[in-house]
Length: 298
Image 1 (cartoon, rainbow, N blue to C red):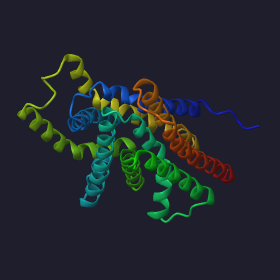
Image 2 (image 1 turned 90 degrees about the vertical axis):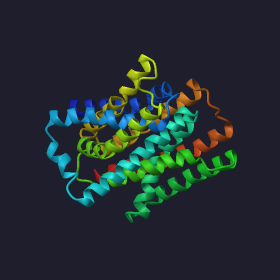
Image 3 (image 1 turned 60 degrees about the vertical axis):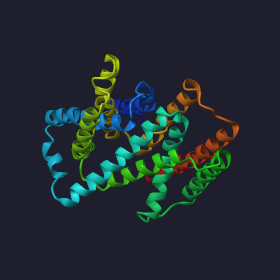
Image 4 (image 1 turned 180 degrees about the horizontal axis):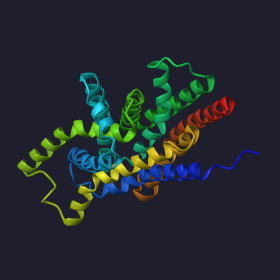
């Protein structure tokens, strides 16, 4: 008989599940701000995240780690690149949610694990097992079916998967922890975000001072909305197995898909469902291969 999970592992799994559930439900938040320019929303997110993260960095006394991420042109360049990828991912995501493409956004995050495998093979030159190749081929068939059905590639989903996977690849090469890394990235983007918001206000296009009280609160909460799931993720990731985390990651796009179909009433035809089914089949193969590999190593 296998040992029951420790209380620490159980808390880690619950925390990680709450993180992914929060990421899955976040379209409900962004939809409340659909009347605001997505670029402005992302600028607010960067600026108010920095305020929140700076308080956490001071409380946890990891200022030296943050300074290490700014030590030298190479460190600054890599962190700025990862920050740009994260910003692009969030911008595409917010635009997609607020223009009625929640289902396609969920597809993007379903594709992320398979994009990670492909990056491992073609960028890091890792060896892929047969089931991993089959998983990628099955998901590619699902994307091809969607292209035939839509008459175009699902650009939104592909952009989300590509930017998030590339961001993850850069973060893997960083020695910074998740909180310090996010703080450095946000610090590098904050001047650009602040300049853009000042320009928006100067030209009369900015939201602050021109929207109702509830919208003001929602806009100013963007930093907390962003940072809390990340902290939950960091807590959970240190306490549970990677395979468990890999299974839990499907919770977020599953919740997003449910919101797109049953809350936002986006069209979900049989052809589109067929494309999703092939992608889910690829994910099932990938997950099975990971679980089998984990047991073999154990």
